Amino acid sequence: MKTVQQVMEDKKIKVLSVAPSSSVYDALKLMAERDVGALLVLEGERLAGIFSERDYARKVILFGKSSRETQVREIMTEKVLCVPPSATMEECMALMTDKRVRHLPVLDANRVTGVISIGDVVKETIADQRQTIEQLEQYIAG
Image (tube, rainbow, N blue to C red; front, side, top):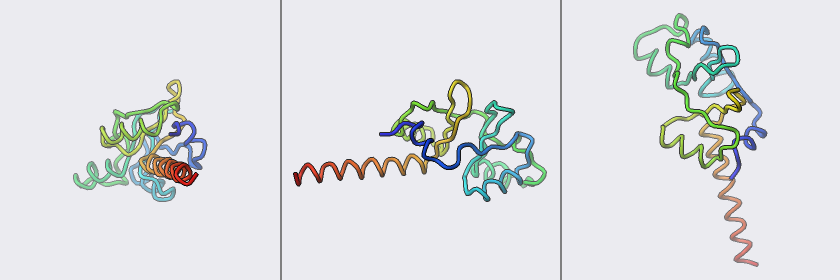
């Protein structure tokens, strides 16, 4: 199975982020434009948190807040699970399943280098299984 580094090399989008002072509205607009479900929240180059559709639904809509007036820092998830570039997709899947998260920032020496999503993990798992099936079919036919 591929490593996070190998998968990130194939991704077109590397890192999409907002500042903690950004409005929730601006963050949602960027997410819609780029068709992503989460953004990293960076203070300079330091990972401050992650902002997801789940954060919006649970912390803005349900509490009657305004997305134009609320800053990302007010509702972002601050405790973020991260993975190193050497992690495998299998390890990412286990972590995502166990902790019920859909996005894992990738940190290399405390520097953000990318994000792995549940979609990336599923895509790689399917490709890996397809390859295994093809190898087994060749073995049986061979």
